[in-house]
Amino acid sequence: MKNKSLHPKISIIGCGNVGIRFAYALIIKGIAREIVMVDIDRKRLEGEVMDLSHTAPYTSPVNIIAGSYENIGDSDIIVITAGKNQQPGETRQDLVNKNVELFKEIIPKIQHQAPKSIYLIVSNPVDILSYVTHKISEKPYNEIIGSGTTLDTARFRYLLAKNFHVNASNVHAYILGEHGDSEFAVWSSAMIGGILIKDYSRICNFKEVQDFDKQFRRIFEEVKDSAYKIIERKGETSYGIGLALTRISQAIINNENTILPVSTLIEDFYDMNDLYLSLPCIINKNGVQEPLKIELNDAEIKNFKFSANAIKKIINKISF
Image (cartoon, rainbow, N blue to C red; front, side):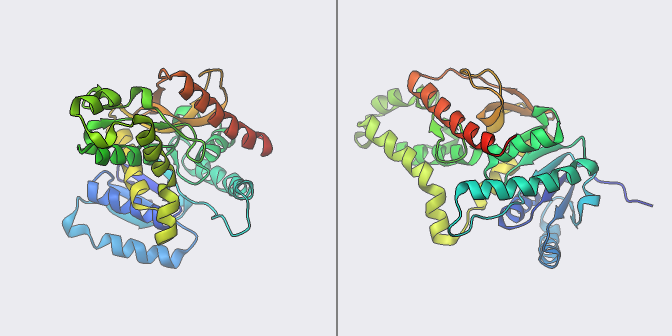
């Protein structure tokens, strides 16, 4: 007799560094009651599951399974981190082509086993692969979520907090658009403690933050360069995205109506349509309950359209 799943149930497809960090964060946070892990390297996966399972005396009860696609049925969320890495000499388009072909293979397998689950896409380029997943699966857009700029926004909030000497939880600001080189900061609505950032600078009289434009450019460039700097030093990034995925999963599982900047289907936003990019979205048990079409200033609208057109060019090249 087939064992009945425990819920909440989260399945992870692709258990490299990102998938493992995510699983570890899920266990520590006590969000899932069952975690199914699927990876092509079965031997390593079994070792990881054994290691994670030995945290049991110090965490909430969770059943961790080194499984296959056959085990992912009736998952609440399926998180897809599987993907090819860019090799020396390869272009970004080469990487796109390889991962699109991979998704053509794995998305039908996932959908066959778990057609009603919410799919959370992490593999890069995440906006393209979220769109591809939406098209291949024909699932409603709200059930296909890209991790998008959730991590970029976390980096942004951290750097602003460091610059202004406050707790990062008191900073409310977004990086939106592509998770990649064309992303942009929404400075017009960035706040600290409910005060617009330029006003906060004047009120607090921080000498080091008086040259707004110079400081803003420096902070944004540091956000964009963060991944490159981390990869240069340690070869990959995984802790930040692991916790970002945990936060998104928590909002879904707990039906929180939490607003997070995730990649979602763009329809009729500043004349852009039919692509995935990050906007602030209300996240609950339905996935994306609603994207928030926030007001942008003229420079931000230009940046958004630039980002959208960059993604559109890639979508056109892969004929989706």
